[in-house]
Image 1 (cartoon, one colour):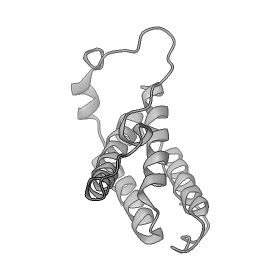
Image 2: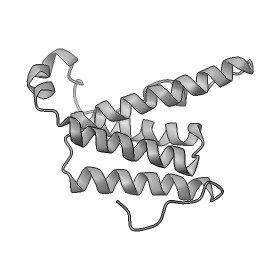
Image 3: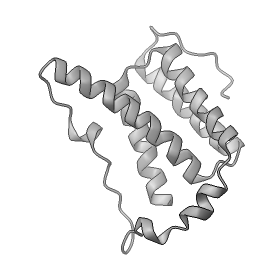
Length: 136
């Protein structure tokens, strides 16, 4: 997606996060990816990263900050719509699984190849989750 080469695992975390961010923006923009598809892929990786961090924290008798473990609050004008207000059957029927698989592969590859630490990666995905929820 982005023209730059994949950052090395020993490059600064900020550089690796920026690479992930740029590629997420580029892919979702280039493929006009619907918010619901982005949301589903993000939720998968948030769950995977969070489970791994919770396991490590538990093993070391530590506790993760709420900023990582909980969905961020979003400011919306008026009352936020409930899940029952969405036409779920219509939304789920129009998903492009190939496009979602590509985004999934993009995220997985960047996380694995750059060895991006899970806490900063999860924070970035939580930020995206928050933006997606505002748009939903």
